[in-house]
Amino acid sequence: MRLPAGKVIITAALNGAFVSKEMNPNVPEQPDEIAQAALECYNAGAAIVHIHARDEAGKPTGTKEKFEEIMAAVRGKCSEIIIQFSTGGGANLTIEERVRCLDANPESASLNMGTLMRQTGAFAGTPFSNLTKDIEAWASKMKELDIKPEMECYSQSMYRDVNNLIKKELIKPPYCVNFVLGMQYQGAIEASPETLISMLHFLPADCYFNVTATSSAQLPVTTMGMIMGGAARVGLEDNIYYSRGVLAKSNAHLVERSARIAKELNLEPATPDEARQILGVVKR
Ligand code: KMH
Ligand code: ZN
Image 1 (cartoon, rainbow, N blue to C red):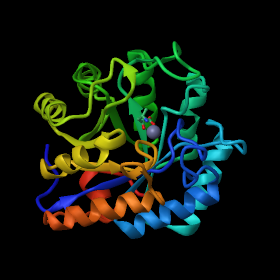
Image 2 (cartoon, rainbow, N blue to C red):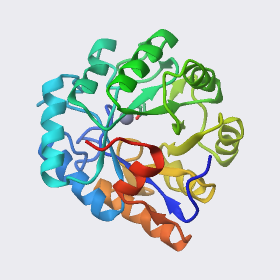
Image 3 (tube, rainbow, N blue to C red):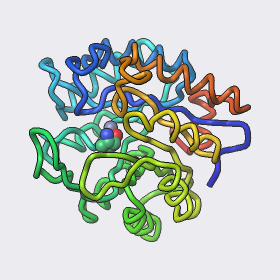
């Protein structure tokens, strides 16, 4: 399903679990840094911020208290933007820790639609586990709490679980799918024009699509997604560079460029309230 004509929805993925200040000193980790980044991204044209929590040492954490702290900090600086918490968490978190963020009552949360295997780094061999029974349980909890799930699909195979949730009415339309392309996990697919077209071709009915692409594919593949009627996710979680060898100065640096390109393509970035209306996000 395409976004309304002339509109695009931009998500800023601020920090993720893997990127660090050593890789790019502008990655926001602590609540006040995350809040400042959210404000700048809102001013640059983002309607949604996708957030992972870090502890004081910068390691991924899943405590309700930390997510509440982040929520209060972001709301204190930017009351408008849609806050999406990650239930992907980080490789060091248990399945229970990953979903505790739902108790902090975000408007939206990511919902990963299948199991992948990490093959590089310190957690090589640790699965990114998302079994159907867990996906169902998390979707039910999000439905109960009126939290809009964004279904993260790393390949077309994950549409089986999307269709399962739709069939069992564990999610409410309109549905939101994020194509996560180019992850270095076993089971993921590349970020390219061909994979994007294929993901779109097999997308189940009544699903809006967002496009995430890693590293140097972020700009071209998310731009292609906008042209095809999708939303775009940019930010330091997926790409720490602005251009070859040049680190991005901030998340807003990346959002500004995508908003500028969108406008050149006659696509107006949706405000958070417009995005809520389009995607069926319940305002807090
Ligand atoms: N960085 C990827 C694993 C999530 O946070 O739930 C995609 C992602 C998933 O953002
Ligand atoms: Zn994430």
